[in-house]
Image (cartoon, rainbow, N blue to C red; front, side, top):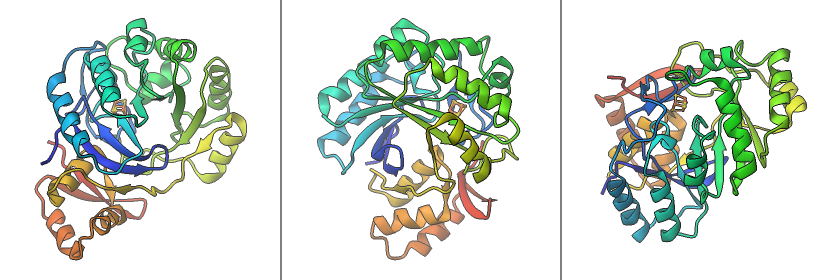
Length: 309
Ligand code: SF4
């Protein structure tokens, strides 16, 4: 059986072997980040509605957890922004009733300023919000929010989560060359971070194709400088992730992963070897010819991406 809302497990550096749940699919998001790996997102308003049936999502989760693959953690993430799903509280509660594994939520943090949203996510063990901008103009330039969402709401939300969210907070900043990596930016981040509680700070920079072309990663020297100024953990420039799909059909599992996350050639080979697929070259040829997949060269690697429609 292949699934619409569940993928992986994905072995990631931040979350271990993580089973992904995407309650929002189809690239629906209230941001249009320049570095988004999903490519073109479809804007949706800054309000929670039941974009996809909560019962359908829960039925898939129940089906997978009846006979689960090996995994360390469940992560609610998405083909879009998961916090915009109005059934999130219910989904979280049901997952917690089905497994003792830790539950993580990856979010752009746009609605954390709201009491009801903090209440909805309270049972999550690890919250992974993003903070990529340091003022309103960088927020509009990098994250390109829908409607009138102001940058101070993002900071307010992170401060509110710091005080009221009971789980751990692993904050991530995506550094983009020429956008948020100069001395002024770092000094501003330093000030903002003083008022936010976090157990971990991840320093990231793009290593995969991004929505806007020519989004440049910062170099190792700049990352060292930022790390000295802000502390935190730089995420390695090259992916070391391995993928293990939950579906039975290898090609469909691969397509489901690539749809959410462009993959390097060597990651696909790793996935196939993990599945003990001996004829992996044949599978890659099939992937090369697949109508939904395109390849591109990115920083010297062949990347497999889902074709934009
Ligand atoms: S990176 Fe995340 S928050 Fe930004 S547009 Fe893509 S899905 Fe939305």
